[in-house]
Image (cartoon, rainbow, N blue to C red):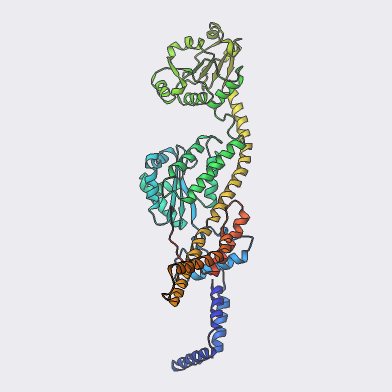
Length: 545
């Protein structure tokens, strides 16, 4: 920065009349003599100043306000960009806004997830849909938060903001989180994560792709990201940058699931049980198959969910009491659940072809019980399938010896789960490559937005000059011109300006799809800002933030 100041000072001094310099030197000598100090020649003074300047050429201190320095360092013309950055820093010393030298606003992600925070804290931070818009408005009311979006699910509560000054923006978001949840900040901070710019955008793409989920590749999170985008469409605080980010995340999530096998294969005991039975049934589906579940706890709930996803639409649930079964009936109306109590278990077992057991009652069925039952339906090959996912087991081990029974237990299911986990891990490597590509596309698009203020400033400056010169010409021409002639002169001035601006405007436009093209566009932008002295111009923003 000092080096630039020295260059500018030397350039300006070159235009000063030599006699002025001589008089200044003489006056300086007289003042030194009167004060009793030794008289020093003007030449010596200049040499000493030059020495001080040469010793002061140091790397300017980097501040946290330089939000994304890597976006202006481009291989196309590093020298041009470095020069422009130095010029910006020099101008900031002249009393300009301290934010004038920032490359751009930062995208910041701050929040809580199942990986870092217990549910007792997460539930206090949950933002329901009916309060979403209000929360965005509150966040955007802070001076350093330009845009905001909230992804709130049962496993995570993540806030994405575009911050004018990232560390100030973070402090303001933290303040809002503490105020909203009623949890002191010192209690929230140990559970919070903080990501900035490319780390933040990469994180959201991974979340949308299912790589950050408890069950890798699960599809529910993509639907939740889509919901955030839908909620934000008509909200002012959910501006262009975050709208573009969530749109990129949705695209990335779709590609991961359609172009990799990350979402295939069961990775929980309940889902593995449903998948294994479906694989083993003669038709590969549950059509015509009578299904029963023993127990109504968490495992059974997950089992109902996975069976419904596999188009099993009729089932009986046997439990010691009716309360939990009635809850499942209300939560899964499409499952057409029938209720039976444990006293009627053996009679119900004989009526069903597939029996999943997940009760906490110990052994409830033996080989002797099976011997008294009629075989299963011919549609399932005449063999009754017992799937025991309870620990301790509900099905006696000797049931597997019955000729009309096929028995599966937790150990059989775990093999399938581990196999599917290995497959998903391999698919995750493919997914990460896709996400890297999608992130590069988004970052290029975002970088291309940097030129928009420059385009506005250039057009504004050209219009101010055109209008001023037109007014001067009209005054010189007097009142002798007709309205038609005045209109022709004005159109002439507009035409000349538009023709002159066509080249620079083309150099500033990029659709953001080609990162190398964006790099060249940014170099052009810095050059034009310097040539036309556009940095100090303020153009009112229009539309959403």
